[in-house]
Length: 166
Image 1 (cartoon, rainbow, N blue to C red):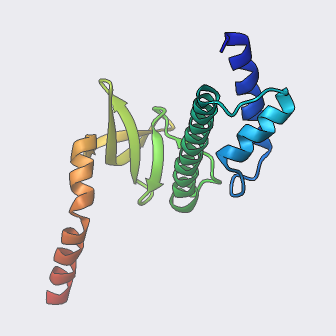
Image 2: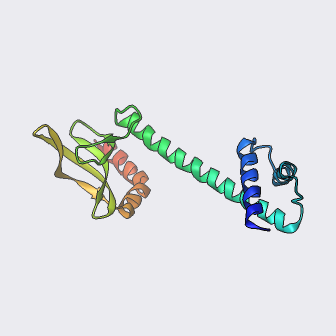
Image 3: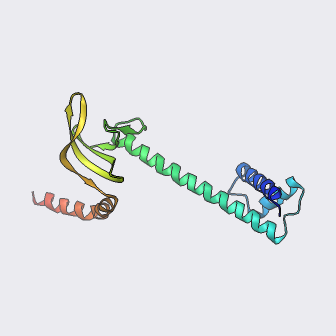
């Protein structure tokens, strides 16, 4: 199969996939529609394999795009719900992403330091009209953040026990 034929087949298959209801479409239907549009027989093994590869690639791209959109929406929801924003990403004076404001002076941010992303839970103070991070707080690496998240239930149980004693 020459490169020009491959390009035409790929373009046609992707057009069909983009136009289709993916809950109803099958690889067989895609191949038959493409064969009809192109006026060529796509039923031999090499054509079937080529169309299958295009379909698989297309589905992986769609899944990846949906996952990325979902992650972006979840990030925006966090800022909108907890950060008081309107769904837009809120940045502090240093350009760090504010995930949420715990109080007027405390917030959770994602910041970059020496090439590493850190989750920072910190107290801020005002100076010359700017809000600046103080030394009161903690910055966690990805690994430390994962460990912390896994232990949230144990922390909550300890807090409940402590509260029940009071």
